Image 1 (cartoon, helix red, strand yellow):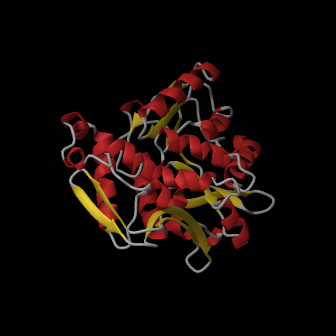
Image 2: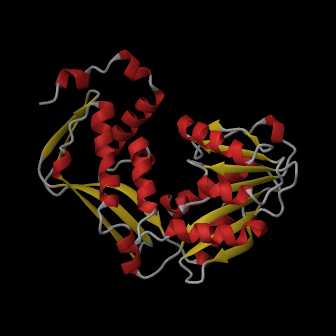
Image 3: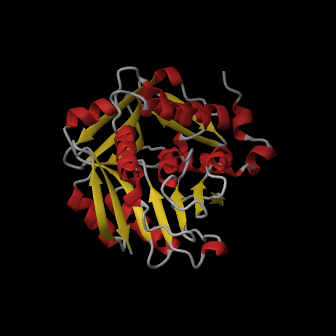
Length: 324
């Protein structure tokens, strides 16, 4: 049985931890909403990041290998405008694995600014990259890319190329995506460029297989949200009583993921309590899929104009390059 008094009275050091505070508040806000939800940004603790890396290797999960193929094939064209004094700015950089493909094609004395909420991920990426690109100026920034951001003064007068891979833009519904792209334009400044990876609409069977893999890795990734809540916040979610569900809706154009409680249960943490009914779903992720024209419209509304578009031969994924 959980120690309820410990849940209601977290230690002072726990309260002061900004990552813990953000997770606790985000979880409370989501569980108060109707329907209940958990923001997808909380997927990526250490275990969640490891599980996602496993997902990218699955036969059913095409986005990572397809985008990587496009970046590898067209890298020189994608970053050809970066000058010796230019800067590549990546939003939500994580391990910077895909960025390493582009770094091979930019001048060695350019600047790379990876932006991520995880200082650990940034430090590990920098340690790896300095070995391969010893003359590259790397200036990591710990920040939430969805919030307003001030770039280092050292690149104020440099040409800037933003990079937002992984179809992460799909986690934002179209109106929110437009606002995010407008924020990117403000961060990068005028006469900048932006590269974005976008997952395209396709056969629903392909999409449903990608989010319901045969090995159940995506289900583990989804459930890890609740495991993280139990371990980090002292919550008491019954992990054995949830089912992973994910489905593509052609009408809305998105895949939605849920954790569905298989029984009635009460959940408590940090002075907060809520109840889950039998078969009640908690929404954990929306992944929007686009037609080419639809995404161009979203980008245009966010202040960007199309420079060029690259697709794989099966037209499953696209990489856009915009300018403002």
